[in-house]
Structure formats: C-alpha cells, structure tokens
Amino acid sequence: CQSCGAECAPTYRFCPRCGGANLANTQPGPVASSAAIASAGISPTVAVTVQPHVANPISVTAMRYAGFWRRLLAYVLDHVVLLAAAFLVGLVIAILGLASTLDSNGVDVLFNIFGVVAAWLYFALQESGTHQATLGKRALGLKVFDMHGQRLTFGKATARHFGKILSALILGIGFLMAAFTERKQALHDQLAGTVV
Figure 1: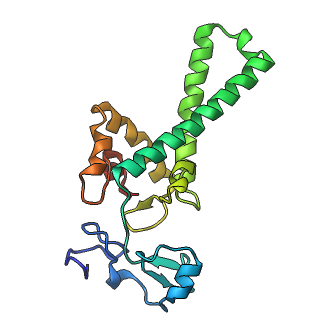
Figure 2: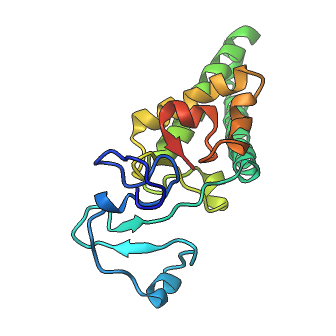
Figure 3: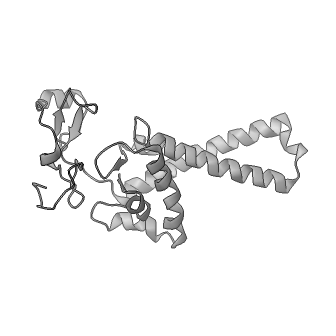
C-alpha cells in the first residue's frame, strides 16, 4: 500500500489495514474532473478514477467506513421494512382464512420459518445486488464491499447475514465491535470479509 506500507495481495484494490487504494493493483485511467464528480453527485471526499475499459468503471481510491450509529440506524430502518412486510403477509393470510386450517403452533412455526427466510433473502439479495445495500443502508448512503473493494457475491452476503447470529449471541458485542475496530467492522463483517 502506498499509504501505509502494508503488503497487499495482487487482487486487493483496497488496503486491508488502512482502507486506502492499493494503487499498484489499480489499473491507470483518466481521472474524472471535479465538475464531473460534482455532477455525478459523488462526495468530494472520495477520489474517483474513471476506467471505461474495465467491467466496474469507477475505482474508489479512498473509502470512508460507516460508523456504529449510522449502521445501527440503517439496521433499524431495515427491520421496520421487514416488520411492515410481515404485517402485510399476516393480514393477507388472515383475510384469506389460511391460518384457520392450522393450529396456533403451526401458525407460529410457519411465521418463524417465513421470517428467517424473508430476512435472509432481504439482506443477502440486496447487499449482493447492484445497489450493494439494503433499503436502510441506501437511505443513509451506505454500501457493502468485500475486502477487494468489489460487490459481494450472494454466498458472501449470506455468510455476512448469518454471521449476525454470532454477533448477537455474545450479548451484542459483535455489533458493538463496529465502533472500535480500525475499519469499523462488526464481528460478522470480519467473519465474512466485508466492510460498510
């Protein structure tokens, strides 16, 4: 890394220690003008290199990591969305009378299974999608990257989502780690190799 001197793997676009661009591994390209950056709505604190010959034409040369409180607010917003969706599904089931064919234990099991699958798909599909963020993260201008500065695969986004179980099991300390680690990674980010 030209910023901190750490050794970076040839495929890393960002330094795992300081988050700076691993310029030795970034293909050169014309630098976007400040007017082009401003018209694209990109924060002036983020330097951008435009590379039209590369599949991902924008290479971020400096990354600001999201702090604990912004991530917590995004998480709360995401759970409001999930609760609203669960309420609508429950309402449809009640209107159609589908719950009357099951006993109360069957309904509980059905809703628990639906909740786990819905939350998994909500987080994994959106964080591995083109926006690289859930609705809550998008509302706060956050994105999730792997340690190479690339979009997550569905498998990595799934590992990150289920890693939250371990973050929660240790009395939430896994989530609090985002306030104290160098790249503001929670435990599930470290396990999955991701940054926000």
